[in-house]
Length: 261
Image 1 (cartoon, rainbow, N blue to C red):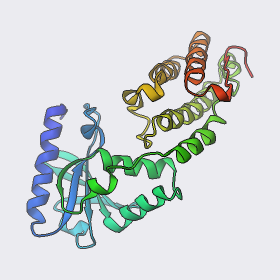
Image 2 (image 1 turned 90 degrees about the vertical axis):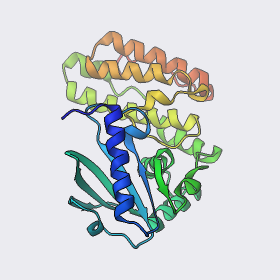
Image 3 (image 1 turned 45 degrees about the vertical axis):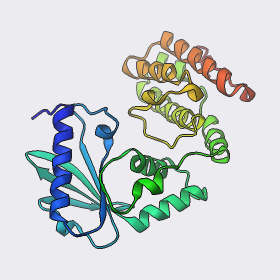
């Protein structure tokens, strides 16, 4: 059954209410995450729920949990609820606080670590006994971390021979190198805004004055992914040049993907 945004929100809220009743008397936090939290849910989106506990809740406490797997943060499971599949995570508070401390100390600036923390920040909390919102509210990229993320990723934004791959009909390598470049760009895009990495899927929605022009670059990449053409490489070059000249002119980055490597 396809579910629209309103139905997905209702199902997610009802599930959280059911968990709160089931775990009555225990201290925990629970939030709705993913596309619903970002108001970007569609018929293909999952319903993502996360429970954060302090060691006194296990997956055995959750009715109808199945396909249980371990994750770096805790446990992940699928739960059937009212005919819909809920993607449920159980994360331990200690793991969360360690992740926050690792980020603040810059021991972990990885995309995976940032994505985990940004999901905690963006979540819609139905119950927050453990003050997760307070722990994550002020997390952002500072100037030093911003410079590091930009430097680490800008070196990968270059021409890997896109036009050559296109003219050869080597679409697999073209897609692979374009995707590699796109991912590096997205990390720069978020860092310019002093934002945690929020994933690739809805990146264009997070354009601000600090990363202005990024949406045009993202759309140019996506257009090539859908239908590779030489003219689109020229468009991508133009938007990238405008973006870097506006935000990072000191790097003197210049692109012309139509001339080949």
